[in-house]
Image 1 (cartoon, rainbow over the protein chains, first blue to last red):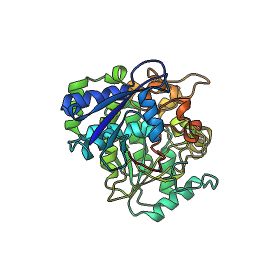
Image 2 (tube, rainbow over the protein chains, first blue to last red; image 1 turned 120 degrees about the vertical axis):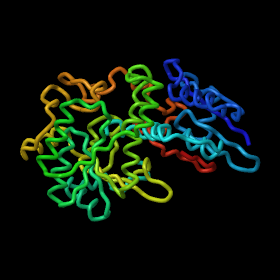
Image 3 (cartoon, rainbow over the protein chains, first blue to last red; image 1 turned 180 degrees about the horizontal axis):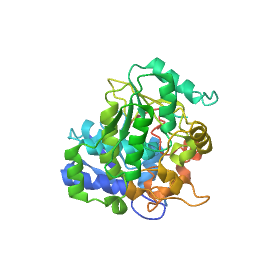
Image 4 (spheres, rainbow over the protein chains, first blue to last red; image 1 turned 90 degrees about the horizontal axis):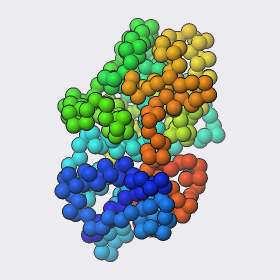
Length: 111
Length: 258
């Protein structure tokens, strides 16, 4: 199994805040060791490796993870905690899950 | 259009019809009340059922005026209001690690997650459906809110939660006309320039011609909150319509999970 972590750089050149947060979580839990490749989707450069991969896999959000196994279609995870739970078999906190829900459902902002 | 939308947008229903639909379809419906103009939901619901189940999320950071208003609504309608609080241990851990004002530095998502989303998820775990005051005119993030939808945020493999947004098609002006015509009590902060009312540190009055969204998390740049990939290479119908935050990923030959 090969895992690719795709991080985003915003159009203004700054790193994506959520990507940084995911990176921090991976580092703190030691799960970064299970990531085989980390590539960048640079919004300023459509030819950047991550942007090309996103286009190829029809992914519209970042960060995301691509899990590839021999003989199988790649699986894309755009929800970090789901990726951790299903692929890395890790524990996810309620607060972490809640934050993922909020980030994935911005209409909840005003609740 | 997102596949989880039940209602055809072209067939707009009256808010009370949407609520009736909810009460008819589900045995366990809960009405969300934020302590602001969504009080109209309570007014409508109490006209439809004697057993209205109302909840509000007490983040612990609301304005004193909002707490007083919640109590006033309880008295006005003679109803119970479930005041749902954050998980004590999770909140204590969050505050210990991040302090009391981390949202000004790190953005509001972390704090909102602990104070609002986790309690909301916990409350909805005991209900089949919920009714919200979400309206399309409130913010760009709500521009596509339908009158009813399967709530993919809180549904699980075992159970489906349906979200009803009876006011989705209403404007702020229509809501306020309803409040005034029916002489419903409202949060006194509205008289002081507050349109959208949330937690005290994250809410401010807005001036003339400012969108209500500018009264919330004004220090954050919208572009930094978006998770979409913005590039002409990735342009699609969804992106063109501003629907970049949804999880409706399209794929024909690979598995995409989100």
